[in-house]
Length: 184
Image (cartoon, rainbow, N blue to C red; front, side, top):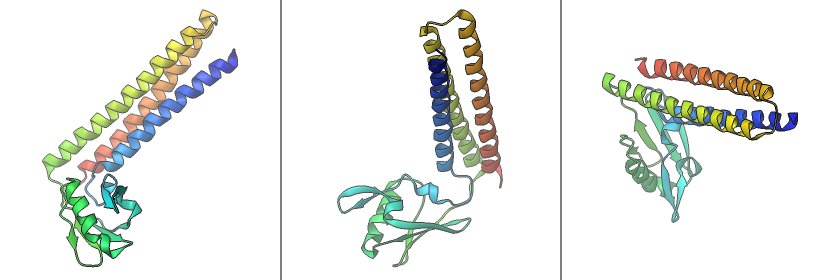
């Protein structure tokens, strides 16, 4: 019986870890003023007929806080990469110099910073919803187990403690991301 409860708690914790991991990935895509290779993570390049992530056909660097350079492994891919960046609708204007592509990342306006902070809050709220969903599933599974009411209550308290712990983690991540976004 204890094995089932431990398994249930481990599965709940794993689900909550997944929500945190997803939040971290989502935050990486939210621009925070300085250039980052993660900004191009959603770009897919038509590589010999199949859509391929940009990172698999080129080396992506940030020589400074305002510039991203993309150096393709094959020179004939320059136009395809440039087209893919334009089509990704990220608001970037890539410049092709014949050897690699340079993207100047414009500074954020105050209004855009607020929009990005709202986007970060929405992502954090989605993560909290995932955490609460994991809690609901765990509590439902606990009720399905044939154990004493006291044990059920104790395990529900443990699940709530996990929920609180992960919610605090999300709030901490959000505070850091908001500070990063709002920093000029």
